[in-house]
Length: 504
Image 1 (cartoon, rainbow, N blue to C red):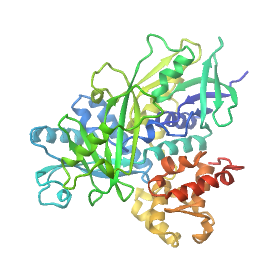
Image 2: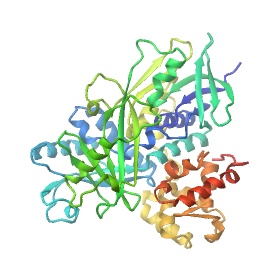
Image 3: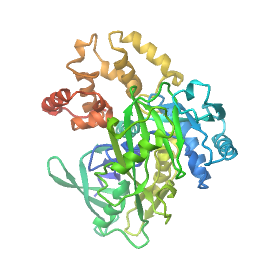
Image 4: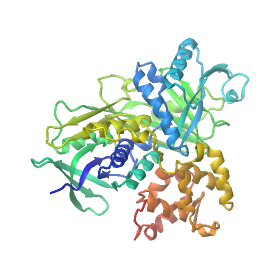
């Protein structure tokens, strides 16, 4: 009997969604499943950077940095609405890395990037410039360089949306309970719908295990792990969000006495995002929480540089994620490699590929290598290097011109709503606006710019099943929505979800 799918991908984080998209684009029938929402785990809890990883140069990870910088350019072209250039300011700190070390590192960073859209690094004066006016007077000089920012959760969602558009099936809140070949050359995967409690079985020629922190647990639950199976190192990273600490669209990268770096990044207009911490983790990977010590570390880290000191009381939101890194035996969490390992097991007759490690920036090339490896073929390999992500078909990637054009087309939209739609959905914002001639025609206004039209779009086209999927992963309305608005949407949720189905 013919299997239900060519490929079943377990885990709808950035790696799993990227693999499902790549495989579907090569003509494979694909099922993507996740026990939670898309990007509910690690992939929505990053520092939200598409970057080479400047600090990885110190660890000798030259191949990883070069690959990351190449991917940075690819993603900037593929999704200009959610991947944007950002200038980073690195104040020099006496007694830490000498200027010549930083200057050499930045030269190498530029050199590894090759000819790209982003500006080259340079030395800067902070004492008498606008980029230094919010810093303490001891910050007299430093460096500037360019990288990119992204909305990490939306990057994952867009990969899943594109996978579905290319024929993949996507099931969220559906857990993998067990896998077996039953002595055949086909995988039988037992799945459970966590909302209804129903269990069912599918069959697939191949399986990719991209479950992140649960990659080994998935194998162990089905007695598929062996002494040769790679181990996972869980590392928790936490971030805090505070009211905006400085003017400007630039970010800061602050060196710390422990040789780590902490970023301060403009976030959602009115806030500053600060992160990240790094510490080994042994708790429940589904429920990481920031500790008081981490809050103290991050507030202390930025207080060393900004004129205005902050306290933990000013934190308006915090989030933590657990990175599932390939365990290379390194003692310190900050030194564990961010590179990935693809473990192909053919001993069961049907191919099983498990993904260990990886980072947000390199997900696309990881996916390409994963599909090459599990299929044993390179037909149409690399197609994603030139393909746009949904909504990314912005003429010349010029977001300013696109926003101006959309402002004329939808003149009744408030400026904040227009920019939100453009920078979240790109050209797909027209799907939200279909038939709308006024704010009233967009349905109920829940406040903070959230209209019923957007809610319906997210349910129909972006796999939303619960209100929290909207305000913490598809958007960040959770930062600004009043409690009464949240309760209002929750109270009316069944009227939106019942009878609707995803139709991307």
